[in-house]
Image 1 (cartoon, rainbow, N blue to C red):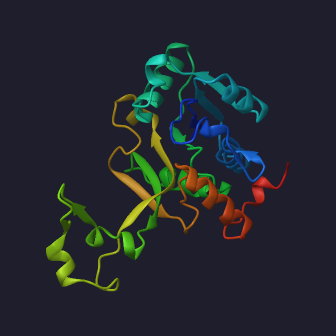
Image 2 (image 1 turned 30 degrees about the horizontal axis):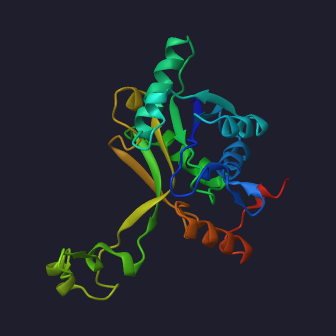
Image 3 (image 1 turned 30 degrees about the vertical axis):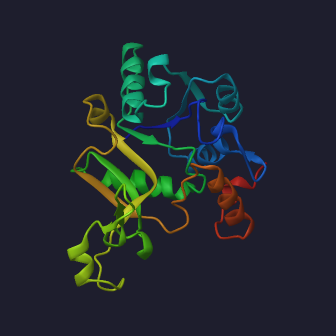
Amino acid sequence: MTVWGLIPARGGSKSIPLKNLVDLDGRPLLDYGATAALKSGRFDRIVCSTDHDGIAARATELGIDVDRRPDTLSGDTAKVDKVAQDFLLRAQQAGRTLPDIVVLIQPTSPFLLPEHVCDLIDLLNSCDWAQSAHNYCPVPHNTHAWNQRTADADGKINFLFAKERQSARNKQEKPALKVFGNLIAARSSALLDGRGFYAEPCAGCEVERPYEFDLDEPLDLVLSHALIQAGAVSLPHMQDR
């Protein structure tokens, strides 16, 4: 089974300008997921899809291929499923043999570990019935769906699942829900068909908190640095500088 890694890294981030190159504990954010992928040893090819010269240069320094994505897929509304589909179609047209699996390595998941990569690839490889796979993490009690509210224009608050919450107010009574972890993969055939990275049926495996951390806003940069400094995450693959 052949596996490619795809790192989507636009240059036009609005929440944190040029987020993919922002410094996190002395390294560009791009380095974290890319290094985990490289250290996993499970990829036949790793490609950074970007529209930015600086990101392309850093990816090259890391030993990663660069694919210049079309302008039509470089805006804020560009969907990663379309980016992957376009990338595979152009690779196919160029005469490349496509991989069996494409793994999406998101730079906003800085706590991705090489073993997370290995576990997910092995899972999808072992599940003939699955068209995609991703890891997941338990939903914290406070953000459980049955605790969520809506707010009207006049400020009135309503529980989104009021009936369910009445029957289960403490965390032991609520059903165990999951949220996305830090890694997703799909079969190339599903991506080419337009079914995307969440093509069904989908397999899953659990990843521990806080390794699912998603770095999106300026406060997330502060929090991720604090987690690293406190030793709340172990990133031995990042120690070689």
